[in-house]
Length: 204
Image (cartoon, rainbow, N blue to C red; front, side):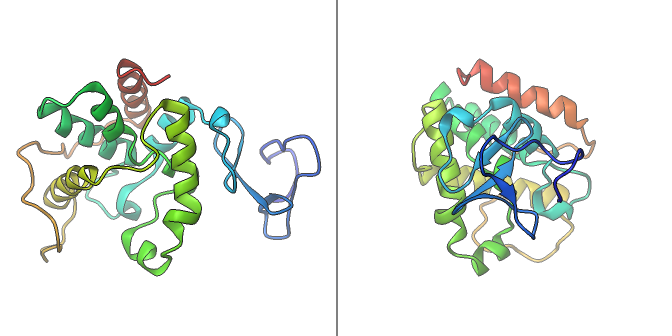
């Protein structure tokens, strides 16, 4: 994106876009989050905004949009939070389930096949953003292994209810009883639901 009136504002200083449209300052690379620019190289927890996370995830499609109806990362996150809440989890555990994909607000939802081709993505790009989010909201710096179980339960429900692939997906558990509605909610409602859930769980 060239510099101009349609471009997001740049921080003061020597930061500029390169020929590929990437915002850089030396070795630092920045992503536009909606309210400002986030340094992906060394993310500052103070620059993490809960409103940006809620808005961006509510508009970010799971499975590259290859679902029976639009299904966002925010809906997936709320579904995961519901699953742990049904099992009597503490507010802290529920908050982690809600936020486990929050780094995608800045780096996008890279599909598993792409992550398999880019093994450095998680540690080099997604990891630093997650750790900044974790410091900002008092969450664990590394996502616990148990979260993978609930992520897989949600994926099993998504396959059953939203993905028309008759082939079995490896490593998925049986889907939970909770189902995903075929009626797509308005993205603004999902944004509000995510934000209010986060606030109710003490994330500010």
